[in-house]
Amino acid sequence: MIRPLDRIGSIKLKLGILVAASVVVAVMLTAISGYLGIRTRWTLPVVVVLALVVTQLLASGMTSPLREMTDAARRMATGDYPRRVTATSHDEVGELASAFDRQRRELVANVSHELRTPVSALRAVLENLVDGVGEPDHATLGAALDQTERLSRLVTDLLDLSRVDAGIVPLRRERLALQGFLDETVAEARLTGRQVSYVVRVDPPDLSATGDRARLHQLVANLLDNAGRHSPDGGTVTVVARRAGDRTVLEVTDDGPGIAPDDRAHVFERFSTGGADGSGGTGLGLAIARWVTQLHGGRIEVAETDRPGQGCRIRATIPEGTPA
Image (tube, rainbow, N blue to C red; front, top):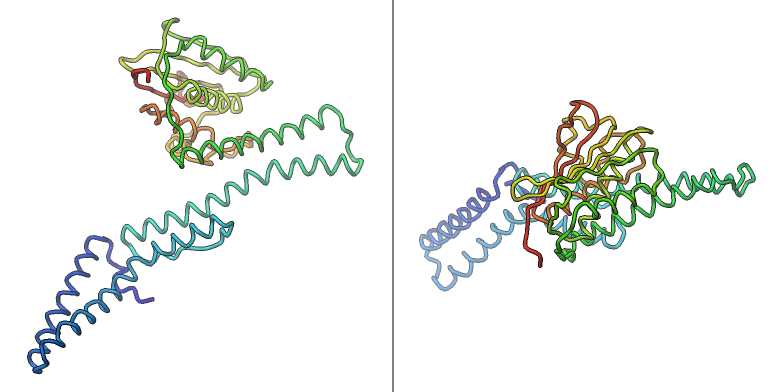
């Protein structure tokens, strides 16, 4: 396909060139027809047709990445993922096509990786049991259950994010007493059986906030899960709630290896695990935490700990609102 405008890095400039080329063609053809004495009634149709041809030749290269992205999205909906998007232009459309193709490939690779690991482990356990290599003891069945739960978490997280993308998650705000709310969420985290201790600090003790209980539970639960997985045995996960002006600050701190400064901007992206430590996370928990925070009009970040270079502190700041 002819793409004479690919080297131009601005869609606005391309549109300007497109309009200018159409006008120039129309003017030139009109002048030529007048010089040759062609009848006026034939001049206008010929000028219009030729101007449209020139416009089509120039515009087709501009819009082809959009058509390819549309076709790729339709194919992905039917399960055909290998479809590639060719982006040769240097403008905003070309950048969008490149980003689309990169995200598509990363999505397939990351989902495949996250599914392959627990499925392979579960298959190995079951094959050993079927072949008589292993015994169906408590440890073996517990390992199989762990991998099944990991798959369940991944599916749940993907469903949550699909609801986010579909825009079908309304907020049901209510007033929450944070001491009781955090105690209940931490009690659930203790059921995972991880060898870590949890500390809850609410200042002042009667501090309350306005928000969606279910969504805020997702936020804190995912932060606790992330902190628990990265903390060493015997470590401590600390949950702090405090007031900062007209905002409520929630902080979850662990004793793990921490997050490198270069990785902090990416840990809230989907399928980002913040490092290959084999902790078993789906890479979706912090993405969901960011979504819940933004849904409440707040922000979430990786903050410095009291011991720079040690541990990780995730801070979510939520503005005060009026209960709906």
